[in-house]
Amino acid sequence: MEAAVYASTTQSPVLLLGAAHVVDLSVPLRRALTDRVLDGVALELDPERAASLLADQRPTGGGGAGAPLFARLWSILQRRLGAQIGGGEPGAEMRVAYSVARDRQLPVFLIDDPIRQTLLRLVQTMPFKERVTLLVGAIVGLFVPAKLVAREMDRYTEAPEEFSTQLREASPTIARVLLDERNEHMAERLVALRVRGFGRLAVVVGDAHLPGLSEALGRRGIPVEAIPFRDLQRATGPSSGPT
Image 1 (tube, rainbow, N blue to C red):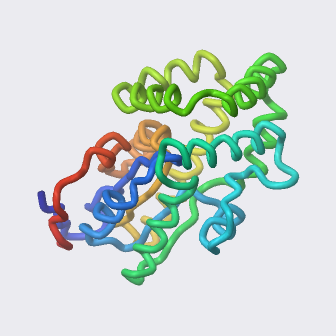
Image 2 (cartoon, helix red, strand yellow):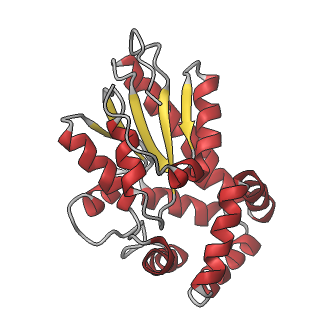
């Protein structure tokens, strides 16, 4: 199916692509980014994470020295799951998007909040019970069999809304700080880019951000085309070629 061609960048919707940080989506993601007329590519990264991921260094995922303990544990867990069930390392989707943008000579925009500030805010505002639950969950996750995690990822793929609801019930602070607040900030940065003439943007974010970011852009009058992780994962057809 050929992508629509719009008369101006102000008519073009923002293309949101949902990725899973431990699953290899290189082929469908590269296809989605190639089969479009684009003014630029935006990534769910801040300068610190981008410097690590895009400089061919081992990605930290925000779990480097000085990060909260649970963030360092989560970084280790992501690398383990990526190796065992996803076929790739955390951050690979950002590398692919950056590579495509570079090949097409498109500007790359970093639209996320500084990761360390976000994590510190999360820890500082999180009630003690939620903090303990998160830390225990990160530790337990280090020993959960990969097959069990893979089954849970399949469940998420089939019903992401259900998982989002469960997250908000279990830890409303995580949902607010890691999803809602960042979605609003990323939407503001995308609006600013659109004002500058970068209307035909492809935006690569974690799949959990798609509903909230789509809604945040919609409230600002920005049309959106969203391709969730499950559709990218199932995209096995031949590329239609640039349009």
